[in-house]
Picture (cartoon, one colour):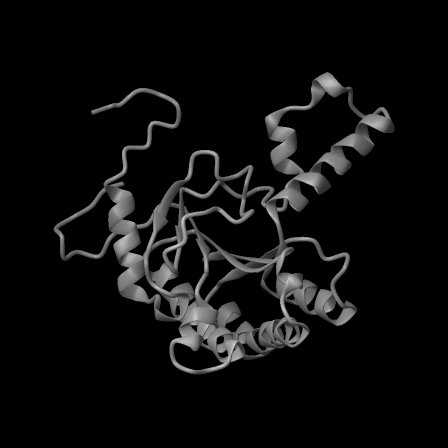
Length: 244
């Protein structure tokens, strides 16, 4: 990825994904509730979506609610759903005006009907936009995504649309939530944790991981640019040999 002087704005790879971690710890350090931490996290999302588009990011995937997050206290889960609704109601018009196309990744079958309609409305309203592609991973889990993909392809085999030996990597990619999107070039994880947490398991095969010791509500333009600069120094061989 081309770069200029150290003080020049870094350019972005096509697809950046972020595991937004640390809302709870951010709140606890300030003697606040976990819910207030999630509210601060939403504020950080607004800033990063705008900044990513400015840096030339074409696809930005944010891990907002996982299939494992249902294990959290009921009031926290309800608050996360309420924050999603508030974010959409407050920001949808602005995102649409800025040309952002929103796509929701994840399993919707066990979501409340109201939430399903909300997500569908966001996607429909922004479907024709040609700016930043914003992927919101909500009720998403990599293993669950792969399970649903296997079921989909398995059904085609059972109905004799295809034969088992006709299953290809391309067919698998087209059956995932990210169908039509490039794999993430870079995955950022905040809060100092060093694990993938069931995020984009298939798609991250050759992603570069950038692990930053900053809690998500404190993640801003400077941290995003820092990640881009770190990425620019990586030598991506994708299974080949070193070109240098």
